[in-house]
Length: 179
Image 1 (cartoon, rainbow, N blue to C red):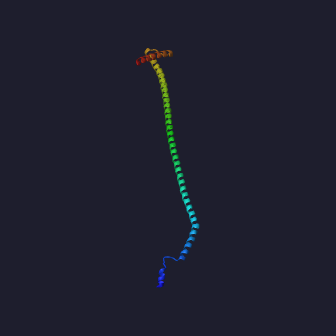
Image 2 (image 1 turned 45 degrees about the horizontal axis):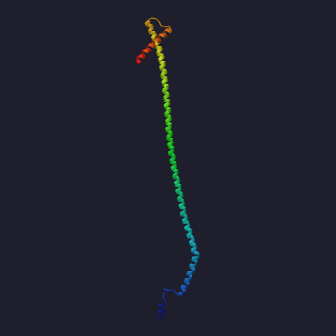
Image 3 (image 1 turned 90 degrees about the vertical axis):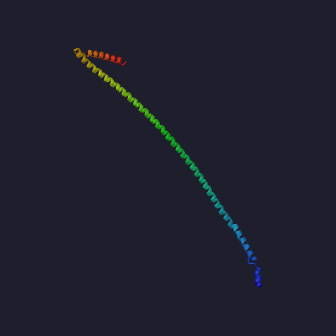
């Protein structure tokens, strides 16, 4: 019972003092080595990771800014290209209208020239027809006058005078009738 009483006097939850001293010294040695060797390495590794992450973020932000600038530049170039295309279309329309107007003027000038040539040709044909008609009328009137008078009007000079006189009378009669 004494043995039981002696065993009851020691608390099994409390370690012996020697174990506590050895444990405390061991803890301090481990703490010293961890504090001197491992903590700086861990801090260095953490700092490198922080730098890598921040650098990555900075590089990503720089890349995004460059992408934004490239996009803005692309949009500016696209707007400039659209503006240039619009200007070229407008110039083409103006040139088309100018060419159309020039062609119209050329066509009208050609039409006027053709009309004038046709008028001149008609006038020449009219004059020729008038001359032929006058000579034919003269010949017919001479033949008719020769038949009426009963003598031949073969003399050229007499024939011309008679025909001219007859045509003058005919023209004066027709001019009087027209007025």
